[in-house]
Image 1 (cartoon, rainbow, N blue to C red):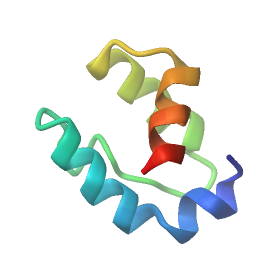
Image 2: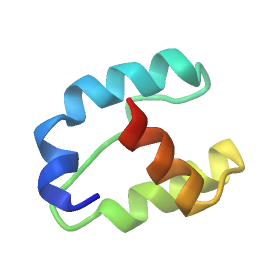
Image 3: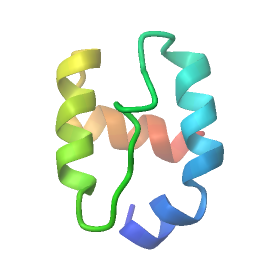
Image 4: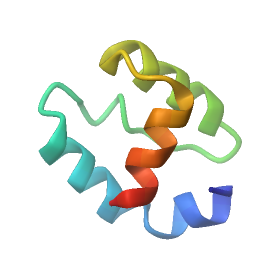
Length: 61
C-alpha cells in the first residue's frame, strides 16, 4: 500500500478501523504527510499486531 492509497481513502478507512478496534483514538489514527511509518508503529504497539498484519487489515477495509 503506498502513501497515495492511504491518503486517498484514509478518512473512510479511519472510521472503519475505529469501529473494528474500539480502543483506537483520533490521535492514534492521525495521518500526516511523511509520518506513515510512525503511525503504523503506534498502531502495532496499541493493537499488538505486526506491520504486515496492520497493512493487510487496512487494505481489506
